[in-house]
Length: 174
View 1 (cartoon, rainbow, N blue to C red):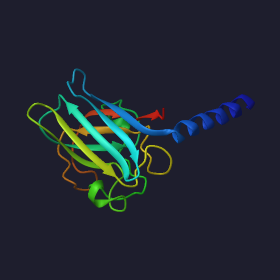
View 2 (view 1 turned 45 degrees about the vertical axis):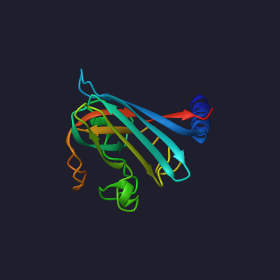
View 3 (view 1 turned 90 degrees about the vertical axis):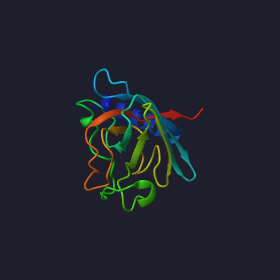
């Protein structure tokens, strides 16, 4: 019991210190299906205006694709183990950049447009989201690229299967 208590206390302080010094993060995006050519990165940065999210993808099918932050940082089982959209306040599905945290899931980033060359990018700043600390922190969660366009319907936008994803890893301040 004593060893467990020491381990728990040490883990708490280690994780608290790491979170306190994190102001950027990255998710390396990979295709979920074996042999998928989808690759990319999502950069996250805490800013005074909110969480800055910058996405660059390649190898994805052309068209619009739902792009969301999901509950868990696990991509097994075809990406389904990532859980649902990150939604700590229990809000309906929407478009977070315009609807805000009062009217949309905290993970509702909308769509990313992929060109005929398989490349796409997206840049957003989301007030109220953070990388670490508080109920709207996204560190350790996952980002998911869906097969279809998010039509903003309820309850999750009808964007279809998960075709790409990555876990959001925090980077300590230098």
